[in-house]
Amino acid sequence: MANADLDVVIRQLAKQQNKDIMAAAKSRREQLIGLAAKAKDSETKQRYKQIAENTLLQGAAAAKRLQIAADNAADSYARSMRNAAEAPVKKAAKKAVKKPTKKTKA
Image 1 (cartoon, rainbow, N blue to C red):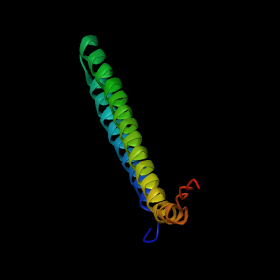
Image 2 (spheres, rainbow, N blue to C red):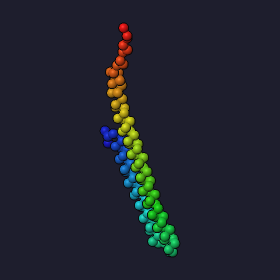
Image 3 (cartoon, rainbow, N blue to C red):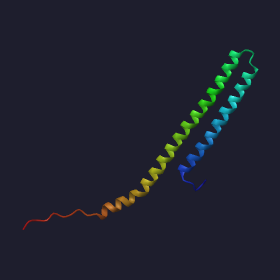
Image 4 (cartoon, one colour):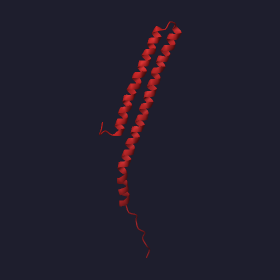
């Protein structure tokens, strides 16, 4: 990773964070499902099941937002590096092109 481009590193870190977020959401969901199984009445059981479902949905949404933000940041970095690499070439090309001289009427 020492010689990798920063955009690749950004994407790898986001992928790992997505895994962590989803693992935490699934773990919390399992805890809530366990509480639902222990619940005495059906209203409490349904409430825990609904919270468990919402927890997983919110975790997935957070992971997706994180992935989109990381992709945007990585794309932006890669684009800026390409532009920076092309800048000296463009400047040299502009210097090479000379302005046409005006012709005088005789």
